[in-house]
Image (cartoon, rainbow, N blue to C red):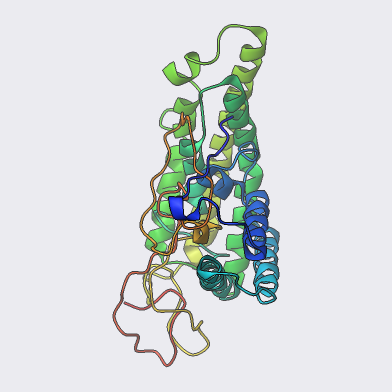
Length: 329
C-alpha cells in the first residue's frame, strides 16, 4: 500500500519536533486506531481492513481519548508559534467534538448526507484498489460492515430512548438510501466487487479467485446489513420520529436543558483534521486508486475526506431560553 508523504514549506524544513508535536502525532495514531474510516480518509495506511465502531461503546472510547489528549495538552508549554497554533486548533476542534458527544449529537446522528448511514458506504470510495492486497482490504472491510451497522443501530436506539430522534423526513430518506444499498440490482456493493476495476487487478490465479469470492460474500453481507438497517429505521425509529425538526438539521428540540453548543449546522468531523490547517475549507477526496496520499502533518496537508470537517452555517437567532445543540433556524 502507498506510504503517505509529508510536505512542508522551506521555512519549516529544519524545525525540530517539539513535545507538542509528539502529543499531536500520538493522537493521530490513536484516532486512526479508534476510527479506521477517518484513517482511510486521512491517507494513513494499516487500517483499511477495519470499520469504525459506531456503537455507544465506540463513541465513549473516542470521547475518552479526546479528554485524555486535552488533559495532556494542558501540561504542555508551546516552544514556538507553530506549537501555539497546534494547541489552539486541537483544543478548539477536539473540545467542540466533546461538547457534541456530551450533548448526544453524535450518538443519534442520522441525516441524508453525512452520518454513519453514508460513511459506512462512502469509505469505499476512498480506498485504494490498485493491488490484490488493496482488494483484500476491501473484502475485509465489507465483512466488517455488518457489525459496524449493528453498532450504529445500537446507538440510534439508545439516543431514541433518551428522546433524541431526528425528523421523520430524515428517517424516511435514510430508509430509501439503505434500501437501495440492500437491493442487489441497485446496490453500490454489487457494482463494487465486479467489473473492469476488479478485473484489471485480480487475475484467474487461485489466490485472486479467493479474493474474488471474499468480495462477493462481503458484498452480500453488506447488502444484508443495510437491509437490516432499513428495517430498523422503517419499523422502529420512524414511528418515534417527530413530523418536523424544530431546531434545524440536528433534530434536537429547542428549550431549557438543551446543549450550549454554538448555533450552527454541523457535519461530523474528521478526527485529526485540526492537523491540516488553521483555515477550515472543504477537503478533496482521493480517487479510489490513489497512487499517493498525504499525512495529517500540522498546517500542511488536507484530510482527504469530503464534508467531514466541522463547518458552520449561520442560522437565525434561537427563540428558546438556551442555545440548541444543532442550532435553530
